Length: 48
Image (tube, rainbow, N blue to C red; front, top):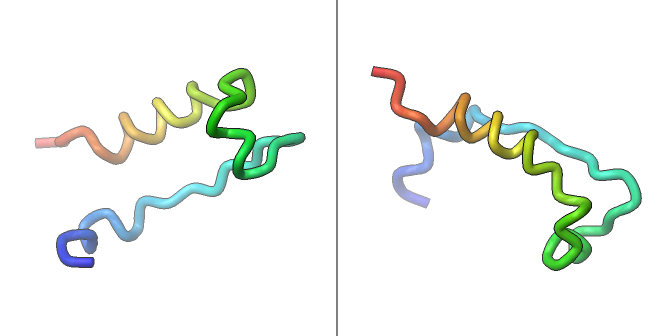
């Protein structure tokens, strides 16, 4: 996919105990929002 190279190195595996991949669509109590927010802030905010 064109344009993804700058972000290719920014990866993190997050394991959510007791959840399957479809659980994270509607069981919002299982979603680690704090982990997602910290990852996005660290990797997607322009650091000029």
